[in-house]
Image: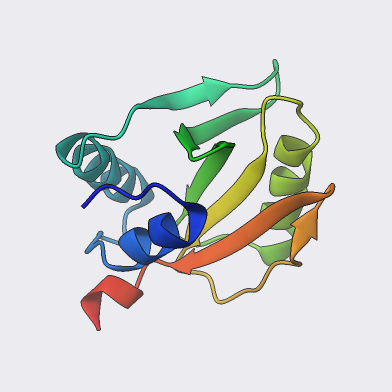
Length: 122
């Protein structure tokens, strides 16, 4: 079922069974799942010369920057998301990751969420 709100999208993401061992493979699997559910999205959306988000989609009234990270340093991930949140075309941030981490409720005054890559396997 296609999500129409951010909470629904988070539930949908947490139910996906993606290969967390290989980030590019997980991105391809997520792309296929998004297409299969009828989501309209842009893969590798260029926000600026430096910032390219993995997936950019509209959910409800939000333009969502969805970043998939299999594993990375927490501060490096956060700084990347912080850069994305500074762009006017981004209304919300979602991090889909195998890295155990939390995000603040807001980044640059925009809602920020984390979804676990491993949750779909439980």
